[in-house]
Image 1 (cartoon, each protein chain N blue to C red):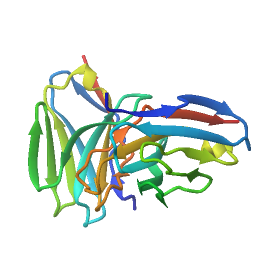
Image 2: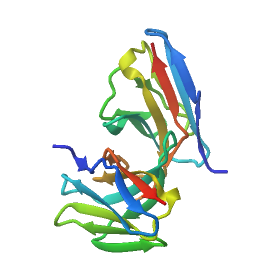
Image 3: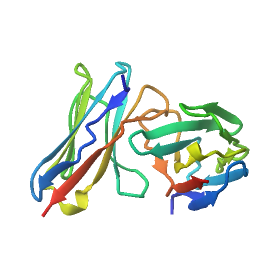
Image 4: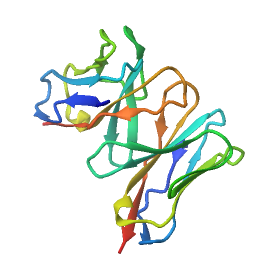
Length: 114
Length: 110
């Protein structure tokens, strides 16, 4: 089954404790992206990757890191999480560089930083 | 000014009625327009996309695009309670970057 998976689905942590949210897709997609979703602010792009070893900042990159060492994986790293990073996070992927391609979303990771 | 604007709602319609969801965008260079449906706590799922002026129909859904007015809409005919969700409008200006509106909550009442 074609899908985007994320782990963990739920995470409660404390300020300053490094964490990684994994994202994996099995569709051989070149493009992958991370979004956060907050009430009243909608979905905002954090980072994206056009292919292996190619990553770039989205609209809200502060406090986050990413890497793309393999085509299928695109982990999101929070080196020192803070309460304002409490949010619902989605990973997404799509094929090629066309703006007409559908983005497939993972199930989401609900993160709470205390 | 927000790049993609939607009325947050909630928009309430009776079962069987037509629901009309609207979206405006600020970037005249926007090329593709998407409507995603999102149930509470779930991930967005694509319903429709459109990139040419005019109407595009898929079952009970019709997307309408007017690039001159920078306006895109989604009509849902014969609305069902299962259509109750938040509808997200998203646009791309080229490449894969999606810019989302904040979504319109739709409630279909029995």
